[in-house]
Image (cartoon, rainbow, N blue to C red; front, side):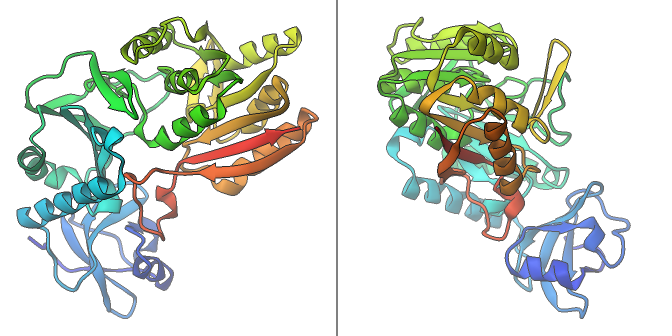
Length: 398
């Protein structure tokens, strides 16, 4: 049901919407949203009253409306939801290799016309991520559609409306449908097997958006000494082992992450001790390696947007320069770094500037060889710069 009148936006915002941007920011509204609840539908017009589309209201935050329809009339019933899910799944089947179809993103929010949420397939189970209050208005209708079209064993949901805050304890994922998942579920990616937990509070244990980065690391690992910083469950390390690395070292603050890496190695038919494990602060490890004269041919640097280890806080928004400098000291001449950022607010230019300054501070020459972003199952509208959050930079150091 459409409640009340529409709202008008500034000419600048209108240009973005006509280019396909899926958000209306609150500061672009010519008058405030009043009497609207999360998920209420509303028509959007430009300053002259020309209709631009329809969206779902957000009651608070920088985003005021999430676009769901760009035509003059609104289509947002169960049949339309089902159609959008069907189109999204068909896109994955058409673009992804068979080796990842059972560990992929099936619905990527605004990129698939279902704003404010995402749906991952993890083996027999689906994991829904809810990122907005607006998505709550249609999530209850969406779950039976997912169950009917995809026949999962079960469906879980992570509530990410508030985001993930350092040191904050998050509740486990909510069970929505079907049977409960085992705490250790094996899924396949390109012939490798990884152990995940779909009920885990933050991540099941494998970041699907880093698939292309893992593939690149595997291709670059043959005959090389590989260092995997902020290794989490060791997926880059597992790829490096299969790629033929002569040595793989994983560094992470959590011992349980290294235990899961050993499980992943065993699940993939490899030696559980194929990766050396260091538990602790990445900066402390890098300084120790520098003093010892240890050098690596390939270093994967994939820090979280923020973290705290023994009182020291790392922020991707301000600390990339220091991190790259410390990393450059342990890279062999002619070696490479894969610098990975998933901080949406850190744009391409800022990351490259920080990386460049860090290399120069270490008195190293750096060259950008190639770049990667999100894989095919994470589509975004071309005009949606905020949606292109993942940056993978392949750097050569002289």
